[in-house]
Image (tube, rainbow, N blue to C red; front, side, top):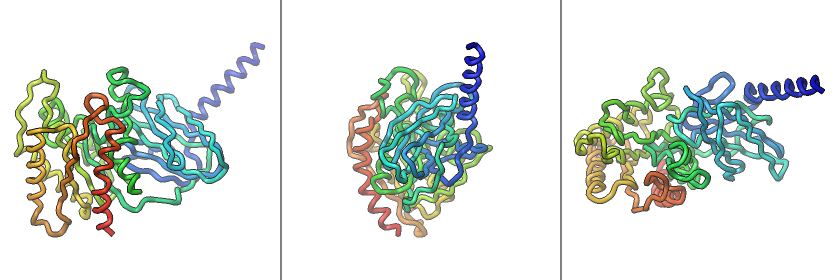
Length: 362
């Protein structure tokens, strides 16, 4: 009896090792967003970065793993045949997610990172099916550059209430306004967004200790580590920039906060747009205002965006920069952020505008 128990434990340990070390199955797959290969694994870095593949059968197991400099969980979203299956907690030990499907036909699976780069990596370790590239691939591409709103921070609190557990436990980038609008338009998307970040200063930092978006945008992991540069092979048809919420914020009310510097904001914005053009010279740039900036601050915000647009008025090599302003949507998510329904309303406003621009870019 004792020998049988030892044998059983040995078999279980072998199975656990196989899950941990499982290589990606033979076949082809697609990736999106900022990702990196690590041996046989795919590292999902940026919010809503993804792996997608097709397979034939009625069962599928996906192996994922959270990775960071310290041990903590992460989150991923699984979509099968265009249907949202759920947001799943991913542990530092390999996390197998198994799905039983209704039909034994070809299915398309997509695994999205629900959190952002600052929350550590989600590793796609493999699956138990033979993978093939999905047949239907979007032709148009949109990049969304922004802050916590673009990340989908605080939007999904159904399972874990606001102000409980970890600060990122309500992140769901899959249901941020950018991905929602892109799916409506059948467009591929990329989120280059970081919570708390700004164009010339951050939520609670005057660019003293923390990096701003111009500092991190060209780095693969959207942080100060410039040893790994982003490849910029996405080439978006449209680039939406939504930065200003944190520049206009008052911070935590405890740390000294200087008055908003309009000239510094505009100067940094103009330089940043030039960086965007350097990597995507033919993209249509769209400047967005914020749901979290209102009143006199929003008037100044729009004034600044117009100054940025005017700085490129003589650039006849590209289409004129566009400005899109959201109509008021009261945020219902955590930390006065939009929740999923609010993001759907935002996407509902933005999508028709983007559709017009995409139709112009044949």
